[in-house]
Length: 146
Image (cartoon, rainbow, N blue to C red; front, side, top):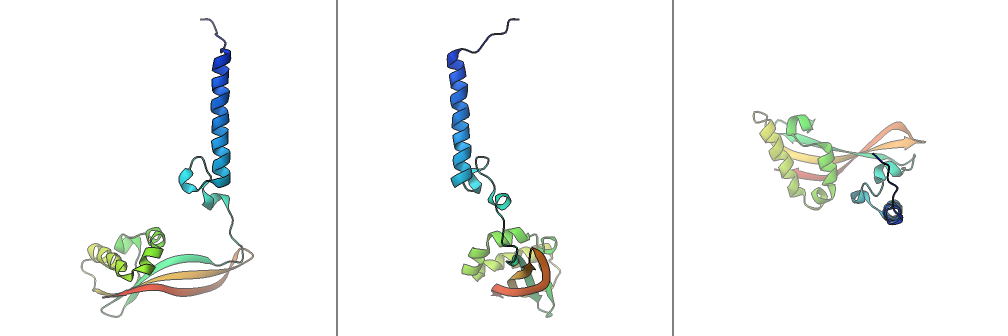
């Protein structure tokens, strides 16, 4: 079997495709957002946060009819923290949406006492030079009452 060399046209096509690909990667790197992936970097991996700025973590607390206060987790409600964090703006704007979390809890825990209140809380974990100081400030950002 003989080895054939690329024609001038074939080399030109390959060079043009490579240049277009490099231009797409360069523009994605400079101007792209996460939804441009793989032509743009994921911002969460390509940027850094201020090492003295608090880290915010969402938490969902519930109070049942007995007065018991506890955290709603994926295990007891089927709702993941990331889902709550992703919908934070909508939950703040319309606290009635939190009722869906109550419904999920009741579906996962049908024998548990009825919930009377759910609070979406953001824990602000303070940092100093990138290390946790141990100071945590809770902020109730929205609440739902039955």
